[in-house]
Image (cartoon, rainbow, N blue to C red; front, side, top):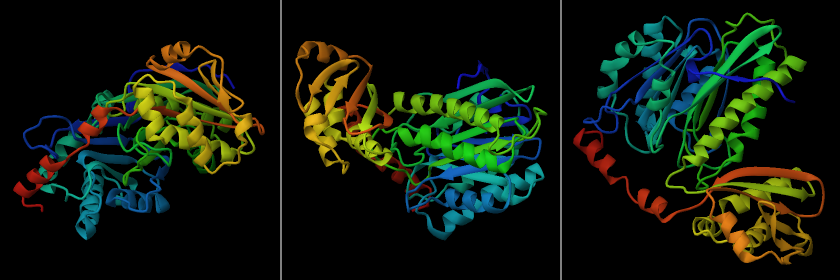
Length: 417
């Protein structure tokens, strides 16, 4: 399906009727002036949908937002960076509920119309004394031109904000879809390992929106990995306010399929941006598995290769070590026949029928030395395929993640631990 998409500016505020804002609270570092508390608000009632982490340890904001979505449609999202509010017990739940409650009161909404999202250090209580004074400023600053501020306020170890927006025609009306995302570490294909907020002015039914978010996430955020870790706070939220004035997009319709394609397109741009901005990564690698007996086997092989520390280390060194790839294929749990496996870097075969190919190793080394390349693994057993976007693993990644002690020192100074 090839639809004419027009790229737009504005990110998560590109769609009609959506406003955003962000302020600095010093959540992680009281001496910092970086944006770390954000708000997204729709001037109109919304249809909404969400997907959340599959980690059994779920942060308080995840539990609160899940509960709200079960009984209400969201109209606002308040989010902070610097502290995950995860593993913080009853106090953490109360803090998350308080963030929704105060925001709702200031916006004239019901509490369950507000989602709460947090990202940052796990296990530290939220410094609510630094957040509380800024709620009114956050609401007062709401503006349709603040999408980039929202995108900047949700990042943690990211090196830059990630936002993308498009418009397309449906039912004779021009609708808009825009969003922002954060993520650089704890990225693994197990829904969704980051925060992502999508807004659209499409008039869309619940069935279509629920189907669209599931399919889009499966095709995008479930197909990225950096370090194989799944966070406690992963959340993808989509709000649709109908401000475009199009005829209702119903589940199972041609227009619903078009909307799903467009939503997937936006999410895929954001998903790839996350991998490219992974913590200290130097390579963006597409791992394509084909010829599997079934989709489950294709996924198992792709995930085993894309998450292998040995494979990812070889990418960092520019080493076309296909032996590490085939060994990961072997332990993936998928049905394979070693003598049928072909492995290629870009279009050049490194392994043919389970043994070394005749391709000049220098040709392969030149490919792996590039910042982006594709690995294709053909199992030769069927028609099923699966792909994952992955990255290398660098010594700098290890150094970057060696300690978060400074944050605990600040929490102790604040009297929180």
